[in-house]
Structures are given as C-alpha cells and as structure tokens.
Length: 265
Ligand code: 5BU
Image (cartoon, rainbow, N blue to C red; front, side, top):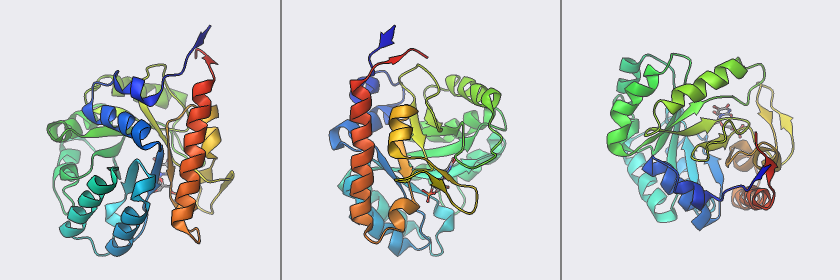
C-alpha cells in the first residue's frame, strides 16, 4: 500500500501553526529548501551573507551568541534583509532548562530572541514544560519551536526511546512546535517540518564529532525537508556559487522524492 508524497504547499494546509504554513508555502514559491547556517563571528560578515545568499535560501540560521560585536541594530538590518529576500530567521539557541528559566532566556537578556527569530530550537531533555515555558513567550509573536530529536554528532545520546518521547511532547503543543531537528523523518503526520544539519556535498566528518551526509540522502532516503548547511558554503571559495549548488541539489532531491511513493512507515 503506497501513499503519494505531498508537496510542501499541500502540507501547509494541514498546519495549525501559521509560521509552519508560511514556511511550507515559501519553500514551494521560492523553490528552495536550503537553510544557511550563518556561523560567523562578526555582524558585518553575517549581514553580508544574508544579503548575498538571501535569494537562495528559505531560512537563515544564527548563533547570535558567537557574534563578537552583537548590537540590536544588527538585528534590525537582518530583519530588513529577511523581508527583502524572503527568508525566515532561525536562532539555534538549543534551550535546555526549566520552563521558567527558558522564558527569560527567550524573551530577555541581551538578545531578546523572541522579538526577531521566527523559530528557535530546544532540547526535550528537561521534559514537556520547557515547551510550555517557551510557548508562553513565543505564541503571542506567532513563533515556532523545533525540538532536537536526533543530532548529527557522533555518539549522541538520543536513542529511539528518547526520540519517541520527544515526538510525544511535541504532539502536546501543536500550536507552537513546528517540527524537529533530525536525521530522518519521524512520523506519518505531514504537518511536521524536518530540518537536517550535518550536510555536505559528500559524506564525511570533521575533527570534533560532526558527521556529514548528502542532500540526497537527507531528502530522498531519509525523507527530511530542509537541509542546513554551514561550512559547506561558508568555507567555499565562492559562497554564492556554493549556495546555488546546495540549493539545486536540495531542491532536485525534493522534486525527485515527489515522483516516488514509498511504503507506509
Ligand atoms: P556545519 O558547518 O554545516 O557543520 O554547521 C552545522 C550547523 O548546524 C551548526 O550551526 C551546528 O550548531 C548546527 N547543528 C548541527 O550541526 N547538528 C545538530 O545536530 C544540531 C545543530 Br541540533
């Protein structure tokens, strides 16, 4: 018994969270499922990447706490560039504390993440009230949460039981959780978004436990939706050309997946 794969626009209709709907629609309209991991340490480099690579991407992922010269003005310019080039902002904060603490980390501090980041990440390790705490801040801004189900790093502790529990927590907050960071599709429910980091043009690893798979393996073999690429683009001699190449590989993989029906999980 085969089930035809749904395209992103069809999946958008099934989302309860408006941000997930927007992202699914944006990907089909812009024809890109590439997320740039803009892991640079100066605001000038971040804004240059956002401007040059913005036309190629659906999402720009940040780690604002690695910027040496963070200012609120940088966020204003980043937000303008996101509107101009039509991409969403994703702060990969990986919240991991009790609900009350993460509320403050999300809303306040130096970065006021909730005021500008369309989506953020959190660990499910502390239990479901981490989601409740973040939702108390994020829902009013129309934000979305991605739970870390499975990391790309070697010897991570996210075993199948942990992953199943993470999905169960997500299901308790469908108005706020939009999907997962994962190496493979986790559910037959089509409204979840699956983001996959650890992507390069060839399989491999770095010297600090990162493991790389290819766009085709993530999108076709593992049924994920969005490829997250950092150093594959940032360390290329021509980052714009590299981004175009990853965009093409990611999008063609998605189009190829749509042609095939897979047995139901
Ligand atoms: P890279 O340069 O493409 O290896 O960067 C990958 C990015 O994705 C980097 O910002 C990591 O913090 C992020 N990441 C990851 O690599 N693996 C994970 O499991 C998660 C996030 Br969650």
